[in-house]
Amino acid sequence: MRNLQEAKRIKLNDNLDNEIKKVVDLFFKKTKKKLTKKTSLGSLKFKNDVGVDGKVEIFIDPSIKGKYYAELDSLNPNNPKTDELFIRLDPSLNKDPLTLYNSLYHEMLHVTDPRFTTNYTEKYWKEYSGDPNIPEKYFGHDVEFRTMPYEFLNALVNEFKRRKKLVSKKPESQMALVNSLSNILNYFVSGEELSNISLDILHSTWSTPEKGSNPFATSLKKMSTTYPETSSMLKKDNSMPRYFTEYILEIKKYNQSRWNKFLSALYSTYLEISNIISQE
Image 1 (cartoon, rainbow, N blue to C red):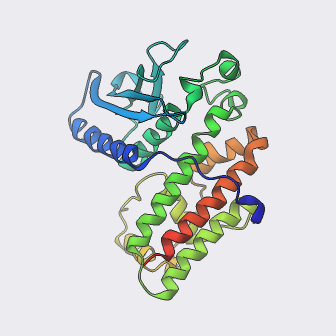
Image 2 (tube, rainbow, N blue to C red; image 1 turned 90 degrees about the vertical axis):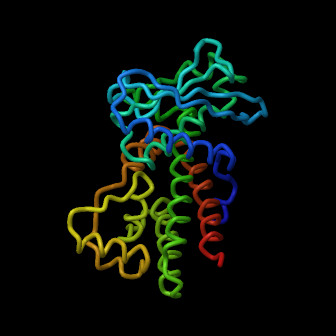
């Protein structure tokens, strides 16, 4: 594993992360009633990776109609500036706070990328397609390598933080969480089979776990969060989490040359989460 310790995950600063969460809360307040026209959610101020200040306006836009969870654009796409950006959110798709948060985190990783504004060049963007239906020019381009893997790694950190707060103090419960983290790392590195609790954690990085209609199954799921060593009692969900099927495996397929960098960032994230779990 030593050769995987080189890259850190790209992440947004804590203040911007907290502001995204406020936008998510406001979105669900505004969408309690059906909206028929574009509605402002204010703006997010940011500093990009080369230190240039900017802001991005956020809108709820019913006209997207099921196309994207969130869509980033510029007032002048041929000469984008850090203070002329906007994000449109689809109220028909965004029904879950966690999914919306992840989508906004994804778009803000784009926003803080200097190649999107201050270091924009036609040469860099020439081979990029914003359409996933052209996968080699979408998943294969570095513009999406910056966002999809690091959106996932941020979601993974947040899910382990959530479970750390809920897990029992029993040594076997703590160890089960540690073992699951190792299992997830080894799945990516060597193809190790994912355990019940690891699959549950990975599904939970994408959206808020559903309560379900079966009280017994719901109780088992809650128990396995507090006592992860009991997860073997759960019926195994062998469906692949959406982060894998829609993002990560597509990145691996179409941007193989960058895969080792993802594994490196995953390993440093593994160390980060290990430290979180070990804290009293």
